[in-house]
Every structure is written in C-alpha cells, then in structure tokens.
Image 1: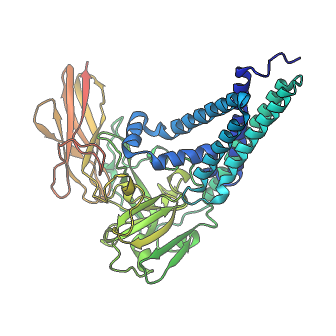
Image 2: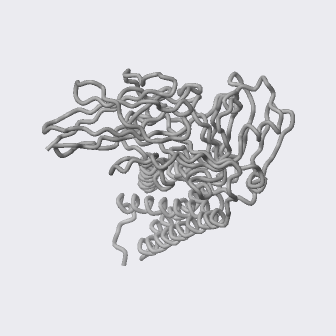
Image 3: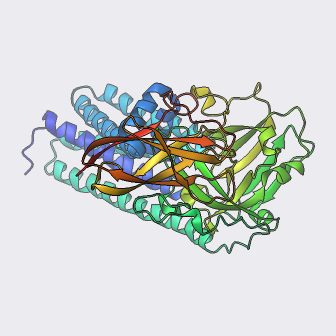
Length: 501
C-alpha cells in the first residue's frame, strides 16, 4: 500500500518534475517527426539567442567557446524541469494557479517556436503537446491522490516514466533517421568536374611541420559558427534558390539547375568576425560552385541596389556589398567543399562564399534567397545586434607551434597568416624584445587563401615571448593596436610564451 501522504511536498514536486519531463520528451518527438527547429528547448534557445544583448552573448561565447549552444539548451532544460517541479509543488495547495502556470509555460514555448523565422503557427504544436502531457499527468496524479487511491504514486511513476522514456527514445531514433535521409541524399550526389579548376598552389603550399595548420582544412576540422541550435535539414529535391528584389526579372534555381551550369573551383579562406587574436575560427577550403555574379546578372540587377541580402532556410540573413560581387573576385554559390558535396553542418545543399569578407556578412549556409536591396532599406541579422556594416577582413597572423614548451636548440616556429583578397606578402617573428626576423612563406596561388610561414629559432633555455606580425599584399603592416572582436573584428599581434628546457 502507498504510504506517502497526498500532502507531501516532495511527492508533489517529484510529480511535477516527472510530468514536465515526459511532456518535453513528447514535444521533442513531435518536432523530430515534423520540424526539428520547433522542439520546445530548441525554439526557446533560438528565442533567447534572438533577444539576448550582444555584450552578454559575446561574454558567454568567450567563456565557453563552441560549447555555447549545448550549454544553453542544457540550462534551459534544467530551468524548465525546475519550473515543472515548482508547478507540482504549487498544485498541492493551489491547483488553479498551478494549472495556469503550466498553460503559460506551454504557451511560451509555443510562441517561441511559432515566431522563429522560417517557421509558422504549426511549429507551436510540439510545445502544446508537451504542455498537454504535463497537464494530463499532474491532473491524473491529483485525482488519484485526493481520492486516496492505493498504489497511485507507483502507477503514476510507471506510466509517466514510460511515456517519457518511450518518447525520448523515439525522438532520438527519429532524429537519426531524418538526418540520415538527408545525408543519404547528399552522398548520392556526384559532383561534376569543375569547368574552371582551381589553380594548384604547388608543392610548397604545405610546410612539413608538426602542429602547423595544413594549407587546406579538412571538412571535419573546419570551424562552424552560426545561430542554428538545430542544423536545418534541407531536402535537396525540393530546395530552390530565389533571386529577387531590385532586379528586372525574378529567378528561381533548383539544385539540378546549379549542377548544369558552369562550375568554378577555388581555394578560399573563410574567417569568423568573432575570431580572437590567435584563435581558430578560420579555415581554408577548396570550394566548388557557380559564379554569383553570373547568377545575379541573369536577373538584371538595378544599379541602385548596393546590398545583397542572403537568407538561410532558418531565416538568418547576411548583407553583403553588391559591388564586391561584381568586382572580379570569385564570389560563388558553393555546392562542394574539398572535393565532396557540402557537409550538412556547413550549409548543404548550397551556401554563399565571398572572399575578403567576414562570414557574418557573406557566408550564409543553407542558402535559399538572394535579395537585391539597399543598406538604407534593410539591416541584416548581426547588424541589428550591434556589429558593423561590412568591412574588409583585417590582416592577421597566428603562431601554431610551439605554443608553450620547446627544447633548447633549433626550433621550428610556424603558423598561418591571412588577409583575404589582398594576400600576404611578408611575415616576421620577434623573440622577446629583439628585432623582427623575416619568415619563409609557403606557396599560394591567389590572395584569397591563408599562407603558412616558418622560421628556424635558435632557442636558449628559459622563458621567451614569441610575437608574429604580417604584411598584406598591398604593403600594409598588420596593426599592433589591440582591439576586441566587436564591432568589426579583432586586431593586434599574436604572442605566445614558450618555456625552453
């Protein structure tokens, strides 16, 4: 016989917690079967990202790095679970206010999902289902305990726990099946050979130095920074790219349309504006795609249009200067990366790549729209959050090796430097307060990629500070002035302290 008294606060809190967790599991199952971005915790996370002040989000990213999204979802999950326990405790003495609180909690999740860009009213369903399951569970608990029914607690635990576990397992499976289908579609695509292949930089593009970043960054190691809590699952068979706005003729392209066009292949380095001095939010890849200038020209661009707004399938936007698309640089709608179709995490089936601009104003993933407009008429996602309008990427250099320790004698000091679309003409290293020493530079074919550098250092025992600086292809030396990433990218020299044994 169940000996727990119906008035036990601990029992009511546990009931609220379990009912809420079961509801969340059902809500996430519903989202996994329909639209993953509408899952309650995913939608709430997206909403938080959309409203949190820039200073707070940047502080959090600086603190935890790329773990920001998992930690945000985990924190919200704990918060919702705690709210459920509190509602259960409130229900014990004041059922109607508790019911209202539970309905309000479900409505918050529903509103967060329905108002996300690219979603609609139907996206509210998973949160509504989550609330209904939690509400029904607590109502059942209430009825059994107030009636003094024997064994009610055990039955509630078994049923609620079973519902939650089954829904969680099913949502996990659905979450694997959906992306697996997208991956299978991606793997089935055979990319044609490029009509205009990339110029090979030659055998001297990669120095054989342990710890030095390779000339071409493997897809698995390429940095990923975006606002997507849940990576969009885009069906390549129904995907289209719409070109509209200040154009003579609106155009729409399918993936097959892109495959049938002249394909260009180029080595291009991308960098995130949030990259700290010495950071790794930068990488170089060989991209395959179609000329952005040619694509837009077919629509007949209004000369008064000075901004190209690119939109992702999840509603994210970037605003690029239209003039840079037509100035001869290899701006493209990319469909391939390092010899294979774009990875899903990097924008499958198509993304934007514009050399010389930070990603927040040029590198839209899961691309669906290109709109010609003006900077006076529209502010893209990050511009409304305090970042600057488009600026050229700043000259930067990084020490990859050594980073902390070295043995006495000859030590290879090496790293990479970049100034996309201007190129790197020189790199120098300074040891402690000594003179700047010229470094050997790797071979490159264009100014749109980073460049490796290397110098042999005669290291003496003790603690030493190594500092690097670069000169771009226009003869401008990297600035020593230290500036944070806000509002248009970090500046300053990268230094490391090395202990020589």
